[in-house]
Length: 341
Image (cartoon, rainbow, N blue to C red; front, side):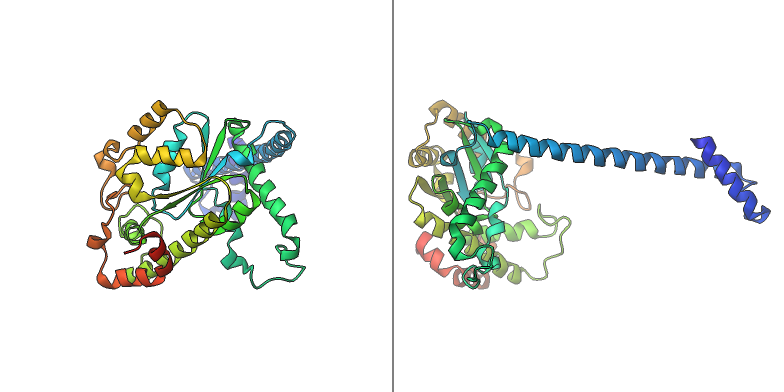
């Protein structure tokens, strides 16, 4: 291949005349030839990757079709949703649950974000042509149900059948919790909340320069503006999740981060009791111990880290009085209900 490129380059150099100087510099011809060869190799590699991607996509489709025809699949009644908001301890809770026998965790599929009522403006769009028109609610709720379960079956075949549970950690998609729970009313639900002032303080720390969520992002123009934005997001997500929780007639548990931090084992026992899921006591103890705050390496904890304080009420040291007032104004109804003075 290289000789062919070399001959081509030498021919072009001859056509360009001696003034080009390429014909008099064989080392340049050799270097350019190698570059062309590498480009051709890279192009061929990309083509092969694209072919394999297409084959893999076909395999995935066949797998979903096969799973949909199986008698054993992920059961809607064995799906456990964790709704709330980011920085409420959902990672901690889901990792403990993931340790337990017969349980798998789907980490943040963001499916709820597809059904954000604020973005879709469900209350405004009532015409029969709207895809989520109220008069066709039964139809599209069935589609949402199939969408979630088909995705679960394709990704978690090990969660199929009786006695197997799929925990879906969905803080970011909690804004769509009401529709998801309506589409899968047999499923179980954990509403995980945390004092919104601590949540906001945690996000502010994460987005500071050098924080774990600052890399590759636009610098924060104003901490006060960020406080307001995060408070509104908490209000939307937790507000919709609370709405879903109140309407849900099945198994559910309301968990405060502060309770989990004060007595992780006792709170985990209560969660599983209220969800109606049998759990091995020894396995539960081991899961709680493995993921305790004390067992997180010191190098992974502290300001600017994913694991920051784990200290309820730390917002009093982290936020200014003005920022606290902003948060309390934005989240007033939820704050009064979940964290009354």
